[in-house]
Image (cartoon, rainbow, N blue to C red; front, side, top):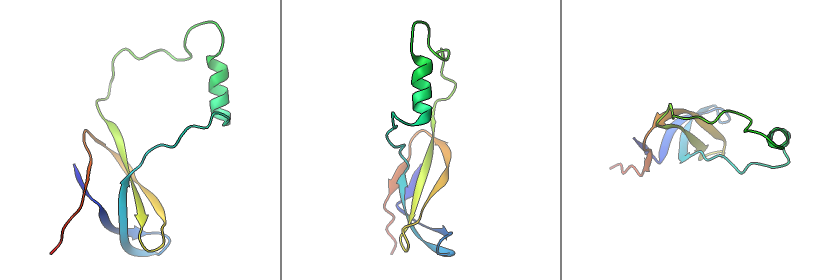
Length: 96
């Protein structure tokens, strides 16, 4: 699926429709000292099997792609709900 590099959509901070630049959302680096990460490490520790059963077959073929929209006017960032796609391409749209 091809997505334009710039989209005109509603900005909640500006309270108006403005131009937004589009990028693909990428999850940040996990913090090893975060509470959930420490809890997970504790449960994984020791002698024995894994914490959860390993999945034998994959149920899904695709991952949900989330678009990150940044307002050109105020810099407010919002995420557009993820859609399942095999391939996502952000393209430059030339208007004449």
